[in-house]
Image (cartoon, rainbow, N blue to C red; front, side, top):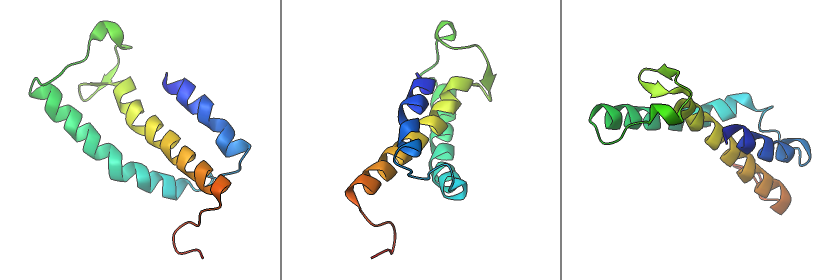
Length: 100
């Protein structure tokens, strides 16, 4: 599903030229503002027993007790969201930041 999300939003980069991947520092900053919060939340919630992950439904590989696909989720979905936002900005002609 994560791969489908990336493949589904890739045309936004290529066809519309939103340049999200070319602005990797900006993208990294967006990820660094969100991913640690959600990873921390997941770590807390799983260790406190609020939820868990069915090993039969995951790849089996984990990092710090979280399935790899859970960690990838916190990267892939924000990237797709940024691509979608930038595509809307491009199509609508909305300015970015302080641009007139």
